[in-house]
Length: 78
Image (cartoon, rainbow, N blue to C red):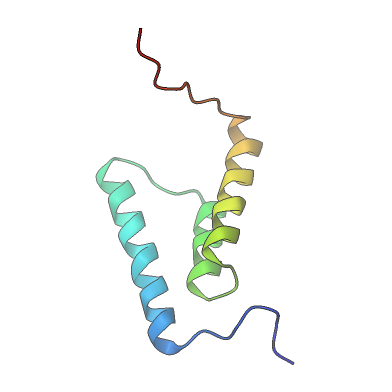
């Protein structure tokens, strides 16, 4: 039985892996290293277990658990 998520092709899987590797490299250039939990979430996306939207929600939920809700101020000019 196939899961609700469509089976991804080898090409799409390679693209997902490349996307994750590029995102991690960008973070590392900024001095950031992902936690084990974040790495697991990224791997689930690369493996096709999560959609991009699901991965984003999972990362947001993880950040909220670790750091609490973050409020970003609007760009208000006076």
